[in-house]
Length: 429
Image 1: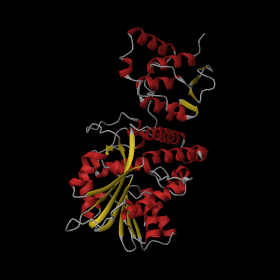
Image 2: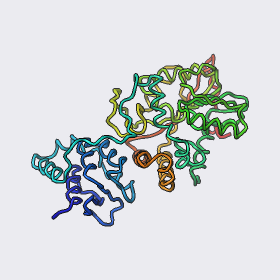
Image 3: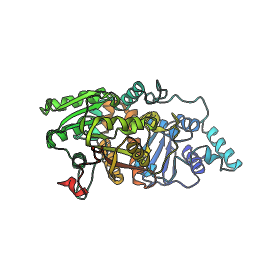
Protein backbone atom coordinates (compact mmCIF):
# COMPACT_ATOMS: atom_id res chain seq x y z
CA UNK A 1 0.00 0.00 0.00
CA UNK A 2 1.40 3.42 -1.01
CA UNK A 3 2.06 5.70 1.94
CA UNK A 4 0.77 9.22 2.32
CA UNK A 5 4.14 10.79 1.52
CA UNK A 6 4.28 9.37 -2.02
CA UNK A 7 0.72 10.45 -2.70
CA UNK A 8 1.32 13.98 -1.41
CA UNK A 9 4.54 14.39 -3.39
CA UNK A 10 2.73 13.20 -6.51
CA UNK A 11 -0.09 15.70 -5.93
CA UNK A 12 2.28 18.63 -5.47
CA UNK A 13 4.34 17.70 -8.51
CA UNK A 14 1.10 17.56 -10.48
CA UNK A 15 0.10 20.99 -9.21
CA UNK A 16 3.51 22.53 -9.84
CA UNK A 17 3.94 20.79 -13.16
CA UNK A 18 7.44 19.46 -12.57
CA UNK A 19 9.44 17.04 -10.44
CA UNK A 20 10.39 18.53 -7.07
CA UNK A 21 13.91 18.16 -5.61
CA UNK A 22 12.61 17.73 -2.07
CA UNK A 23 11.66 14.83 0.17
CA UNK A 24 8.38 14.40 2.01
CA UNK A 25 7.51 12.54 5.20
CA UNK A 26 4.12 12.12 6.79
CA UNK A 27 2.11 11.40 9.90
CA UNK A 28 1.97 7.70 8.99
CA UNK A 29 5.76 7.36 8.98
CA UNK A 30 6.02 7.16 5.18
CA UNK A 31 8.71 8.97 3.18
CA UNK A 32 9.13 9.87 -0.48
CA UNK A 33 11.51 11.78 -2.68
CA UNK A 34 15.30 11.88 -2.83
CA UNK A 35 16.73 10.70 0.51
CA UNK A 36 19.62 13.17 0.18
CA UNK A 37 17.39 16.17 -0.62
CA UNK A 38 18.56 19.42 0.98
CA UNK A 39 15.05 20.10 2.28
CA UNK A 40 12.40 17.80 3.70
CA UNK A 41 8.75 18.75 4.18
CA UNK A 42 7.09 16.99 7.10
CA UNK A 43 3.27 16.82 7.04
CA UNK A 44 2.53 16.21 10.71
CA UNK A 45 -1.21 15.74 10.22
CA UNK A 46 -4.04 15.93 7.68
CA UNK A 47 -4.88 19.44 8.80
CA UNK A 48 -1.81 20.67 6.92
CA UNK A 49 -3.38 19.41 3.69
CA UNK A 50 -6.68 21.09 4.51
CA UNK A 51 -4.92 24.41 5.01
CA UNK A 52 -3.42 24.15 1.52
CA UNK A 53 -6.69 22.88 0.02
CA UNK A 54 -8.71 25.83 1.33
CA UNK A 55 -6.01 28.37 0.43
CA UNK A 56 -4.12 26.90 -2.55
CA UNK A 57 -1.51 29.64 -2.61
CA UNK A 58 1.25 31.05 -0.42
CA UNK A 59 -1.19 31.80 2.41
CA UNK A 60 -2.22 28.16 2.82
CA UNK A 61 1.35 26.92 2.87
CA UNK A 62 2.34 29.65 5.30
CA UNK A 63 -0.53 28.83 7.64
CA UNK A 64 0.44 25.17 7.65
CA UNK A 65 4.05 26.01 8.55
CA UNK A 66 3.33 28.77 11.08
CA UNK A 67 0.79 26.59 12.91
CA UNK A 68 3.23 23.68 13.15
CA UNK A 69 1.04 21.35 11.08
CA UNK A 70 3.88 21.30 8.56
CA UNK A 71 7.60 21.36 9.30
CA UNK A 72 10.57 22.15 7.09
CA UNK A 73 13.71 20.24 7.96
CA UNK A 74 17.11 21.02 6.50
CA UNK A 75 17.75 23.99 4.23
CA UNK A 76 14.69 26.23 4.02
CA UNK A 77 16.35 28.15 1.18
CA UNK A 78 16.47 24.96 -0.90
CA UNK A 79 12.71 24.59 -0.58
CA UNK A 80 11.78 28.23 -1.19
CA UNK A 81 14.17 28.44 -4.13
CA UNK A 82 12.31 25.77 -6.12
CA UNK A 83 11.27 27.77 -9.21
CA UNK A 84 7.63 28.94 -9.04
CA UNK A 85 6.82 26.49 -6.23
CA UNK A 86 4.25 28.74 -4.57
CA UNK A 87 3.00 30.66 -7.57
CA UNK A 88 2.25 27.45 -9.51
CA UNK A 89 0.03 26.07 -6.74
CA UNK A 90 -3.30 27.77 -7.24
CA UNK A 91 -6.29 28.27 -9.47
CA UNK A 92 -4.28 29.34 -12.52
CA UNK A 93 -2.29 26.11 -12.50
CA UNK A 94 -5.39 23.99 -11.95
CA UNK A 95 -6.99 25.63 -14.99
CA UNK A 96 -4.06 24.37 -17.07
CA UNK A 97 -4.47 20.76 -15.93
CA UNK A 98 -6.51 18.21 -17.83
CA UNK A 99 -9.86 17.10 -16.43
CA UNK A 100 -8.39 13.69 -15.67
CA UNK A 101 -5.49 15.18 -13.73
CA UNK A 102 -7.84 17.36 -11.71
CA UNK A 103 -10.00 14.36 -10.85
CA UNK A 104 -6.97 12.24 -9.88
CA UNK A 105 -5.65 15.02 -7.66
CA UNK A 106 -9.02 15.52 -6.01
CA UNK A 107 -9.50 11.81 -5.42
CA UNK A 108 -6.03 11.53 -3.86
CA UNK A 109 -6.71 14.42 -1.49
CA UNK A 110 -10.05 12.90 -0.48
CA UNK A 111 -8.38 9.57 0.16
CA UNK A 112 -5.78 11.27 2.34
CA UNK A 113 -8.47 12.82 4.50
CA UNK A 114 -7.89 16.37 3.35
CA UNK A 115 -11.58 17.23 3.28
CA UNK A 116 -13.24 18.72 6.34
CA UNK A 117 -13.99 22.07 7.89
CA UNK A 118 -11.43 24.79 7.14
CA UNK A 119 -8.94 25.06 10.02
CA UNK A 120 -8.79 28.32 11.93
CA UNK A 121 -5.84 30.53 10.97
CA UNK A 122 -2.96 30.75 13.46
CA UNK A 123 -3.70 33.21 16.27
CA UNK A 124 -0.93 35.63 15.24
CA UNK A 125 -2.49 36.20 11.82
CA UNK A 126 -3.85 39.73 11.41
CA UNK A 127 -7.00 39.67 9.29
CA UNK A 128 -9.35 42.57 9.86
CA UNK A 129 -7.67 45.90 10.33
CA UNK A 130 -9.71 48.73 11.86
CA UNK A 131 -10.17 52.11 10.22
CA UNK A 132 -9.34 53.57 6.83
CA UNK A 133 -6.17 52.29 5.18
CA UNK A 134 -3.18 54.41 6.26
CA UNK A 135 -5.21 56.52 8.67
CA UNK A 136 -3.26 57.50 11.78
CA UNK A 137 -5.09 54.98 13.96
CA UNK A 138 -4.75 52.11 11.49
CA UNK A 139 -1.08 52.83 10.84
CA UNK A 140 -0.48 52.78 14.59
CA UNK A 141 -2.25 49.41 14.86
CA UNK A 142 -0.37 47.79 12.00
CA UNK A 143 3.03 49.09 13.12
CA UNK A 144 2.36 47.73 16.60
CA UNK A 145 1.47 44.33 15.09
CA UNK A 146 4.93 44.05 13.57
CA UNK A 147 7.23 45.83 16.00
CA UNK A 148 5.66 45.54 19.46
CA UNK A 149 6.35 41.84 19.91
CA UNK A 150 9.26 42.13 22.32
CA UNK A 151 12.57 43.93 21.94
CA UNK A 152 14.44 40.89 23.26
CA UNK A 153 13.20 38.88 20.28
CA UNK A 154 14.56 41.42 17.81
CA UNK A 155 17.90 41.47 19.63
CA UNK A 156 18.29 37.76 18.93
CA UNK A 157 18.41 38.12 15.15
CA UNK A 158 19.31 41.79 14.57
CA UNK A 159 22.33 41.61 16.86
CA UNK A 160 23.81 44.43 18.96
CA UNK A 161 23.29 47.09 16.25
CA UNK A 162 19.49 46.75 16.50
CA UNK A 163 19.18 47.99 12.93
CA UNK A 164 16.24 46.50 11.04
CA UNK A 165 17.13 47.57 7.51
CA UNK A 166 19.57 46.72 4.76
CA UNK A 167 23.22 46.78 5.76
CA UNK A 168 26.06 48.03 3.55
CA UNK A 169 28.59 45.36 2.53
CA UNK A 170 31.44 46.87 0.50
CA UNK A 171 34.42 44.64 -0.25
CA UNK A 172 36.09 43.55 2.96
CA UNK A 173 33.03 43.78 5.21
CA UNK A 174 32.86 40.59 7.26
CA UNK A 175 30.17 40.98 9.92
CA UNK A 176 26.60 42.16 10.20
CA UNK A 177 27.65 44.75 12.79
CA UNK A 178 30.22 46.21 10.39
CA UNK A 179 27.65 46.28 7.59
CA UNK A 180 25.09 48.13 9.71
CA UNK A 181 27.66 50.58 11.03
CA UNK A 182 28.80 51.18 7.47
CA UNK A 183 25.23 51.80 6.32
CA UNK A 184 24.54 54.36 9.05
CA UNK A 185 27.81 56.13 8.27
CA UNK A 186 27.06 56.14 4.55
CA UNK A 187 23.72 57.86 5.24
CA UNK A 188 25.33 60.43 7.53
CA UNK A 189 27.89 61.27 4.83
CA UNK A 190 25.26 61.54 2.13
CA UNK A 191 23.28 63.92 4.34
CA UNK A 192 26.40 66.04 4.89
CA UNK A 193 25.95 66.02 8.67
CA UNK A 194 28.13 68.42 10.68
CA UNK A 195 28.28 69.44 14.35
CA UNK A 196 25.41 71.68 15.36
CA UNK A 197 23.01 70.47 12.67
CA UNK A 198 19.52 69.24 13.51
CA UNK A 199 18.45 65.85 12.12
CA UNK A 200 14.95 64.33 11.99
CA UNK A 201 14.96 60.52 11.84
CA UNK A 202 11.55 59.39 10.61
CA UNK A 203 10.72 55.86 11.74
CA UNK A 204 13.67 55.85 14.13
CA UNK A 205 13.33 52.21 15.20
CA UNK A 206 15.45 51.35 18.22
CA UNK A 207 17.46 54.57 17.95
CA UNK A 208 20.54 53.33 16.11
CA UNK A 209 20.67 56.09 13.49
CA UNK A 210 20.06 58.78 16.09
CA UNK A 211 22.87 57.46 18.27
CA UNK A 212 25.33 57.07 15.40
CA UNK A 213 24.67 60.58 14.08
CA UNK A 214 24.93 62.23 17.48
CA UNK A 215 28.01 60.30 18.61
CA UNK A 216 29.99 60.52 15.37
CA UNK A 217 28.78 63.73 13.71
CA UNK A 218 27.84 65.96 16.65
CA UNK A 219 24.28 66.64 15.53
CA UNK A 220 21.08 67.07 17.51
CA UNK A 221 18.47 64.44 16.63
CA UNK A 222 14.72 64.02 16.93
CA UNK A 223 13.56 60.45 16.26
CA UNK A 224 9.90 59.52 15.80
CA UNK A 225 8.22 56.10 15.68
CA UNK A 226 4.73 54.69 16.14
CA UNK A 227 6.07 51.70 18.08
CA UNK A 228 5.88 52.22 21.85
CA UNK A 229 8.30 49.37 22.53
CA UNK A 230 10.86 50.74 20.09
CA UNK A 231 10.65 54.21 21.61
CA UNK A 232 11.12 52.98 25.18
CA UNK A 233 14.10 50.88 24.09
CA UNK A 234 15.63 53.79 22.15
CA UNK A 235 15.18 56.15 25.09
CA UNK A 236 17.03 53.69 27.30
CA UNK A 237 19.93 53.50 24.86
CA UNK A 238 20.09 57.30 24.62
CA UNK A 239 20.13 57.62 28.40
CA UNK A 240 22.82 54.95 28.76
CA UNK A 241 24.95 56.84 26.20
CA UNK A 242 24.54 60.11 28.13
CA UNK A 243 22.98 61.85 25.11
CA UNK A 244 19.59 62.95 26.43
CA UNK A 245 20.63 66.57 25.85
CA UNK A 246 21.14 65.92 22.12
CA UNK A 247 18.65 63.18 21.22
CA UNK A 248 14.89 63.24 21.68
CA UNK A 249 12.85 60.12 20.86
CA UNK A 250 9.06 60.39 20.50
CA UNK A 251 6.03 58.24 19.85
CA UNK A 252 4.72 60.36 16.99
CA UNK A 253 3.28 60.07 13.49
CA UNK A 254 5.44 61.80 10.90
CA UNK A 255 2.34 63.77 9.86
CA UNK A 256 2.24 65.37 13.30
CA UNK A 257 5.85 66.60 13.44
CA UNK A 258 5.63 70.39 13.59
CA UNK A 259 8.91 71.62 15.05
CA UNK A 260 10.92 72.19 11.90
CA UNK A 261 12.95 73.36 10.20
CA UNK A 262 15.58 70.62 10.20
CA UNK A 263 18.93 70.63 8.43
CA UNK A 264 18.50 67.01 7.30
CA UNK A 265 15.99 64.17 7.39
CA UNK A 266 16.66 60.42 7.30
CA UNK A 267 13.90 57.93 6.56
CA UNK A 268 15.27 54.39 6.73
CA UNK A 269 12.91 51.51 5.96
CA UNK A 270 9.86 53.58 6.89
CA UNK A 271 8.24 54.80 3.68
CA UNK A 272 7.06 51.25 2.83
CA UNK A 273 4.43 51.87 5.51
CA UNK A 274 3.23 55.13 3.93
CA UNK A 275 1.30 53.75 0.97
CA UNK A 276 0.78 55.13 -2.52
CA UNK A 277 -2.29 57.14 -1.51
CA UNK A 278 -0.27 59.05 1.10
CA UNK A 279 3.05 59.19 -0.73
CA UNK A 280 2.58 62.78 -1.89
CA UNK A 281 1.52 63.79 1.63
CA UNK A 282 4.66 62.16 2.98
CA UNK A 283 7.08 63.87 0.59
CA UNK A 284 5.36 67.26 0.95
CA UNK A 285 5.48 67.00 4.74
CA UNK A 286 9.20 66.24 4.77
CA UNK A 287 9.85 69.03 2.27
CA UNK A 288 8.10 71.47 4.56
CA UNK A 289 10.17 70.38 7.55
CA UNK A 290 13.53 71.03 5.85
CA UNK A 291 15.59 74.20 5.66
CA UNK A 292 16.58 75.44 2.19
CA UNK A 293 19.48 73.27 0.97
CA UNK A 294 18.44 70.63 3.50
CA UNK A 295 18.83 67.02 2.39
CA UNK A 296 16.52 64.01 2.64
CA UNK A 297 17.78 60.42 2.47
CA UNK A 298 14.92 58.01 1.72
CA UNK A 299 16.05 54.39 2.12
CA UNK A 300 13.28 52.04 0.98
CA UNK A 301 12.45 48.71 -0.65
CA UNK A 302 11.16 49.09 -4.20
CA UNK A 303 9.61 46.86 -6.81
CA UNK A 304 11.75 46.26 -9.87
CA UNK A 305 8.71 46.84 -12.07
CA UNK A 306 5.72 49.07 -11.40
CA UNK A 307 2.88 47.17 -9.73
CA UNK A 308 -0.85 47.90 -10.14
CA UNK A 309 -1.90 51.00 -8.21
CA UNK A 310 -4.96 49.25 -6.75
CA UNK A 311 -4.19 47.61 -3.43
CA UNK A 312 -6.01 44.40 -2.51
CA UNK A 313 -6.15 43.53 1.18
CA UNK A 314 -5.48 40.24 2.77
CA UNK A 315 -4.39 37.48 0.38
CA UNK A 316 -0.65 37.51 0.87
CA UNK A 317 1.48 36.07 3.64
CA UNK A 318 3.23 39.44 4.01
CA UNK A 319 -0.05 41.33 4.52
CA UNK A 320 -1.50 38.84 7.00
CA UNK A 321 1.60 38.15 9.09
CA UNK A 322 4.41 40.63 8.52
CA UNK A 323 3.61 44.12 7.23
CA UNK A 324 -0.15 44.71 7.21
CA UNK A 325 -0.91 47.53 4.76
CA UNK A 326 2.72 47.66 3.61
CA UNK A 327 3.14 48.76 0.00
CA UNK A 328 6.21 48.24 -2.17
CA UNK A 329 6.36 51.00 -4.76
CA UNK A 330 8.58 51.43 -7.78
CA UNK A 331 11.49 53.83 -7.58
CA UNK A 332 9.87 55.96 -10.29
CA UNK A 333 6.79 56.61 -8.13
CA UNK A 334 8.93 57.71 -5.17
CA UNK A 335 11.09 60.02 -7.26
CA UNK A 336 8.01 61.47 -8.96
CA UNK A 337 6.41 62.26 -5.59
CA UNK A 338 9.62 63.86 -4.32
CA UNK A 339 9.94 66.08 -7.36
CA UNK A 340 6.27 67.06 -7.33
CA UNK A 341 6.80 68.25 -3.76
CA UNK A 342 9.69 70.48 -4.84
CA UNK A 343 12.72 68.29 -4.13
CA UNK A 344 15.63 67.98 -6.52
CA UNK A 345 16.70 64.34 -6.78
CA UNK A 346 20.46 64.21 -6.57
CA UNK A 347 21.30 60.53 -6.35
CA UNK A 348 19.89 57.02 -6.14
CA UNK A 349 21.94 54.00 -5.13
CA UNK A 350 20.67 50.43 -5.36
CA UNK A 351 21.67 48.11 -2.51
CA UNK A 352 19.79 45.01 -3.69
CA UNK A 353 22.61 42.52 -3.24
CA UNK A 354 23.46 44.10 0.11
CA UNK A 355 19.98 43.35 1.43
CA UNK A 356 20.23 39.70 0.42
CA UNK A 357 23.43 39.42 2.48
CA UNK A 358 21.78 41.19 5.42
CA UNK A 359 18.74 38.92 5.36
CA UNK A 360 20.87 35.77 5.25
CA UNK A 361 22.79 37.06 8.28
CA UNK A 362 19.47 37.57 10.12
CA UNK A 363 18.36 34.05 9.18
CA UNK A 364 21.62 32.64 10.55
CA UNK A 365 21.16 34.56 13.80
CA UNK A 366 17.57 33.40 14.18
CA UNK A 367 18.50 29.77 13.61
CA UNK A 368 21.36 30.02 16.08
CA UNK A 369 19.06 31.52 18.72
CA UNK A 370 15.95 29.47 17.86
CA UNK A 371 15.18 28.14 21.34
CA UNK A 372 15.65 31.52 22.98
CA UNK A 373 13.43 33.15 20.35
CA UNK A 374 10.67 30.60 20.90
CA UNK A 375 10.94 31.28 24.61
CA UNK A 376 10.42 35.00 23.96
CA UNK A 377 7.55 35.04 21.46
CA UNK A 378 6.42 31.45 20.84
CA UNK A 379 7.04 29.04 17.98
CA UNK A 380 4.38 30.41 15.57
CA UNK A 381 5.93 33.87 15.49
CA UNK A 382 9.48 32.57 15.15
CA UNK A 383 8.37 30.33 12.28
CA UNK A 384 6.72 33.37 10.69
CA UNK A 385 9.92 35.41 10.84
CA UNK A 386 12.11 32.60 9.53
CA UNK A 387 9.82 32.10 6.54
CA UNK A 388 9.67 35.83 5.89
CA UNK A 389 13.40 36.49 6.19
CA UNK A 390 14.43 33.48 4.09
CA UNK A 391 11.91 34.20 1.33
CA UNK A 392 12.93 37.86 1.31
CA UNK A 393 16.61 36.97 0.95
CA UNK A 394 15.81 34.96 -2.18
CA UNK A 395 13.61 37.79 -3.44
CA UNK A 396 16.49 40.25 -3.30
CA UNK A 397 18.88 37.79 -4.91
CA UNK A 398 16.66 37.66 -8.02
CA UNK A 399 17.05 40.69 -10.26
CA UNK A 400 13.44 40.75 -11.47
CA UNK A 401 11.54 41.03 -8.16
CA UNK A 402 12.67 43.31 -5.33
CA UNK A 403 15.32 45.96 -4.95
CA UNK A 404 16.16 48.69 -2.46
CA UNK A 405 17.27 52.26 -3.08
CA UNK A 406 18.77 55.09 -1.13
CA UNK A 407 17.38 58.21 -2.78
CA UNK A 408 19.11 61.47 -1.88
CA UNK A 409 17.09 64.62 -2.50
CA UNK A 410 17.62 68.27 -1.61
CA UNK A 411 15.29 71.20 -0.97
CA UNK A 412 16.64 73.93 -3.28
CA UNK A 413 17.76 77.24 -1.84
CA UNK A 414 16.31 80.60 -2.79
CA UNK A 415 18.20 80.73 -6.09
CA UNK A 416 18.09 77.02 -6.77
CA UNK A 417 21.27 76.28 -4.90
CA UNK A 418 21.75 72.81 -3.42
CA UNK A 419 24.84 73.02 -1.22
CA UNK A 420 25.75 69.59 -2.56
CA UNK A 421 29.26 68.38 -3.41
CA UNK A 422 29.88 68.10 -7.13
CA UNK A 423 30.50 64.36 -7.02
CA UNK A 424 29.95 61.31 -4.86
CA UNK A 425 33.56 61.50 -3.75
CA UNK A 426 32.55 64.54 -1.69
CA UNK A 427 30.52 62.30 0.63
CA UNK A 428 33.60 60.41 1.73
CA UNK A 429 35.52 63.48 2.90
